[in-house]
Image 1 (cartoon, rainbow, N blue to C red):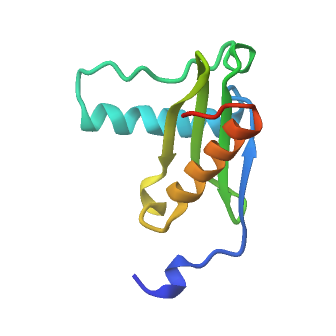
Image 2 (image 1 turned 180 degrees about the vertical axis):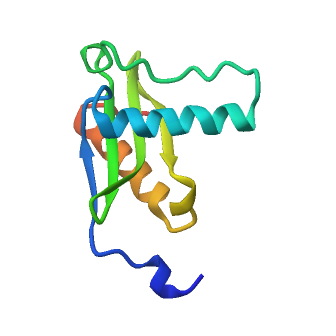
Image 3 (image 1 turned 45 degrees about the horizontal axis):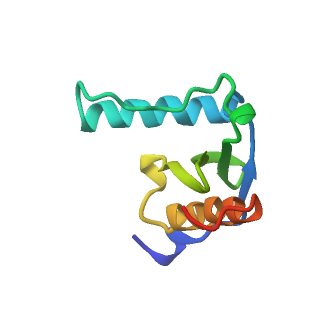
Length: 116
């Protein structure tokens, strides 16, 4: 992989509804990935209905306008529980999951959580 393969014009991470189109496409791809890796295991996935009402937060990572990753957390007592960090297969090994995890942690800190 060349250095040019690692550069992006724009990386944007936004909080979005888990029921939104980009989120749903990423969640479906994540669930399929987990099923391939762990056939028959329960995925404990993200239920989009009531997701935000329960204090959960869902983030979508865009590269040059394309949704390529997502991350989420939910309240767990006085801490925030990391639900998912996912980057589409063709976009992995470029540091995007690291950026996404940092954004999830920062959003949890802004929400008042000191532990994750």
